[in-house]
Image 1 (cartoon, rainbow, N blue to C red):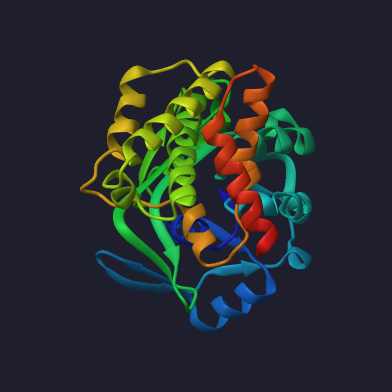
Image 2: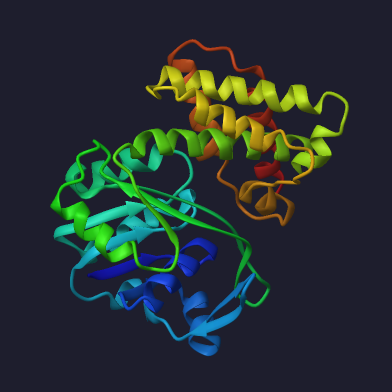
Length: 304
């Protein structure tokens, strides 16, 4: 299977490297700065098990040739418009596109651009970041990759994807209910991002602060009400596990949005929080805590 990994940041770099190490034909589509960095130093993975370096196949938008069987999109959501333009020459009649982005807005955007039959569901769970020299740093052993047809019908095309991904040295989950997995991932990451960005700290600091637990539970409840109104078929055991994970004061957690904010980078405010508010408005739901988070993030973006 010919695979194009759109992006070689922490997510794309890690999972793309594992696919390449498993013998898959993987090309990384990257910008000029990242292209030069990877050409010079290789793709470096720093994991709890040690450091690994590989020489990846690289491409820039101007040099893409031929169609790919699978395109995995791993950029930040605010870069999606440019990436759709970049990958267009690589999309053929049989190409499948698997976005691994935060939120859900990107699915409809990709479907409108390339067709509903092209887009499949995907998400990952990994604690990773880029180091100062562009190395991919996996902070914990967690490295899960979920994928499946958005309508739950995992046909022969999806079976081929599973065959390519399942032996790539990561924990793969071939799901026949990927939409619920996507809703639950959004519930987790938006709650985490909201409370960390609003309080400017990790969950341990928040939960040990006066009113911190009430803040987290209030944000969680607002988000759960929004996604349920939007079509999430609540799985009580799953949502309880998410809340339990977020509410553990012994485990300090932060979101990628919070880490980007503290470094002065652009953030996925509209895609992670703003989209929830638009959906809440559609159902006349009161979400005062989410509104406070959204104002906070908008002010940050005005000031950066």
